[in-house]
Image 1 (cartoon, one colour):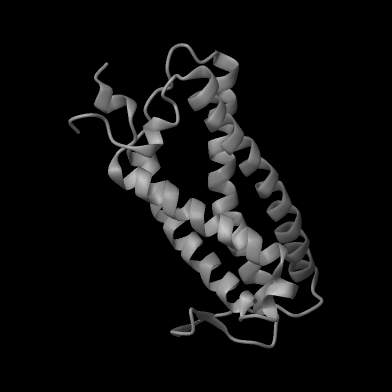
Image 2 (cartoon, one colour; image 1 turned 30 degrees about the vertical axis):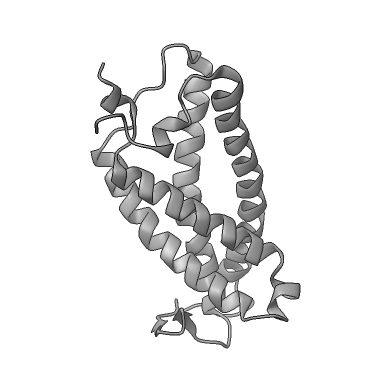
Amino acid sequence: MTEALLHYNRVARTLHWTIGALVLTNLILGIFHDPLGELFPAMPIHKSIGFLVLALSLCRLAWRLTHPAPPLPASVPGWEQRAARGLHWTFYALMIAMPLTGWIFSSAGKYPLSFFFLFDIPKFTVEKGSPIVAGAHSAHVVLGFLWAALLVGHVGAALRHHFILRNGVLTRMWRSAPGA
């Protein structure tokens, strides 16, 4: 197999790192929104980033479905390959579920939803105190903490592959193949 086939292409890498940075920023804004809200409009920015993550994630999912991931090195055990695939598909689900649950429960709020103060985002027709709003809020919080824990594991696994196993797994998403 050629080295180029073992690396993700430029679109996949750009979407991965862009969405990753946005998600990390949003996890920080979401968890620490009370103290950060005293310094700047943390929640409107958090919501705007959420809408951006949703849009980019739908693009990323479409790209991924039409451009399969390169295979992991043969040295990676089967259980670890299955765990990696499962985690990646869990991340795709979270990249869509998190913004949607936030959008649902924010739609019941009194403030308009805007995209970085440039234009308004339509709200869902939901009522504050309704079971769907309460469920969406609970899911958003629980999934946010779950996502943070899974990200720690994801980064830890990538660093293990890079620094301990030295098998090139991290470089597949870090740079293009030589000559590509």
